[in-house]
Amino acid sequence: MAGKIIADQIEHSTAGSLDTQYVVNGSAKAYAERTVDATPATTSSFNVASLTDTGTGDTGYNLTAAMNDDDGPVAGTNSNTATDQGMLGRFETASQMRSQTRDPSGNLVDKRVSVIGFGDLA
Image (cartoon, rainbow, N blue to C red; front, side):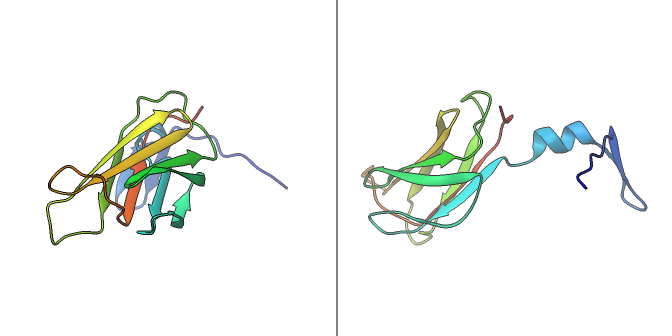
């Protein structure tokens, strides 16, 4: 039998209470880790149905459940700690997060990337 819990607060016996709206709005709605391969694949994911390879170092993460808009933040990191490579994450559309990884000269490069998307689900 399916059920439903309706609550405005969650209370822990020793840690205090928390408004459920904080949990809903503050939780990651999608994440993925992509392989370093030129044709990327996910090694782990949540709410990501597939990847779109849009070029070297440029990957789209197609969401299973879309956001209500494309304004939420996308945070991430790449696997290279030896050089100053950066990762840019953003929502391309309400249904796709996107990451780009660049080397110190600004060239797009394929790296193992982890992204996390926040926002309100549609």
